[in-house]
Image (cartoon, rainbow, N blue to C red):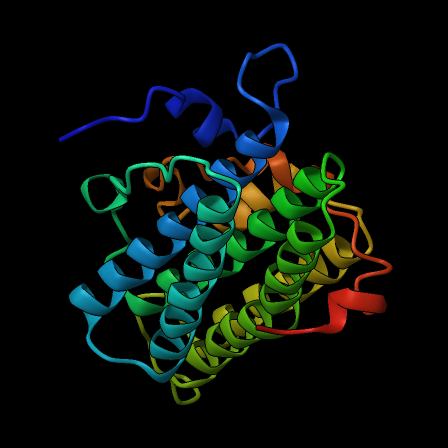
Length: 230
């Protein structure tokens, strides 16, 4: 299968002004490649664990996201990157860990758009990127958070599960909520996040770098175009 010549750039998700490739082209290719990743990841989750309302809804949205970006690439005559993610993605063996991966992936996606938007002057491109970022923040991220909470609450009191007792799970959920709220304020303890998701096989998802979470600053995310959802 054909490979992307700028694969390193696409996986790093950082604009590199030293390259000959125009910045706008880099931004659009990075964005659509990441949306391809999300789509293929959630497809694989459904393939392994069956239909689920959250996964189905987010998957449909991701398809619309990469479709909107492909339209921009065509408008600006930018070559669409090869979607090779179906060869790369691997997902956890249980659905709760999949939801946790979803949380981490959506936070990383929001951070990516914060970075990419710094380099964009074209109004039509800004509008699409803001909308996609807002969809991750206002829709996808809350859905995955709720799914994790629902999974932890599903086990009756005093019953064991693969995650331990309900008391164990509620303790983890409290830590999970604390880390999430800190991330929303731009204060991210990467060590805590790594520990929280240590059983989620996040490392199996190429390009999902926990280090990037430290760049998340979303205090103003509910203003202007960022409130719009696709």
